[in-house]
Length: 173
Image (cartoon, rainbow, N blue to C red; front, side):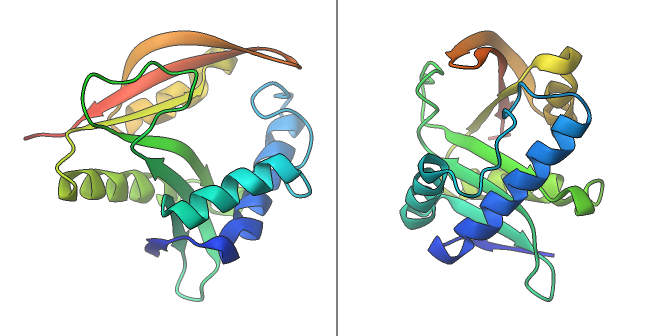
């Protein structure tokens, strides 16, 4: 597996990863995290991922044949519903792993890449937010990556309240 910068040509593959995730979550009864609609064909999602790809924040994990295994979006700006940090930070806006490659270390490799990238930029803090429903199952995934809980929050969406958790990972100086 190698991790490379993503570009506009990767947007369709990342949207397809989102489609996989939505289908998998919905099959498990989770319709709250990302709703029920596919990401592919959603102009707002396509525009957001296009912006991230052009802005240099997209990272793609691919196998030796170029198949996309996962994607991460990192920026130095948190989501608008998250309070800004008191210091410069690297923010994980998205982390997605293909359901077919779940459990193969793809997510951990992307987070490790974020650690290296933060260190190279002289940044000592990485934050991420995630859906906190299902008794915090996704929160625990980020805790396994080394993140610690910072703050619970709720976002009001047209489909209802979205429970979230802000997490942080402090890099050693």
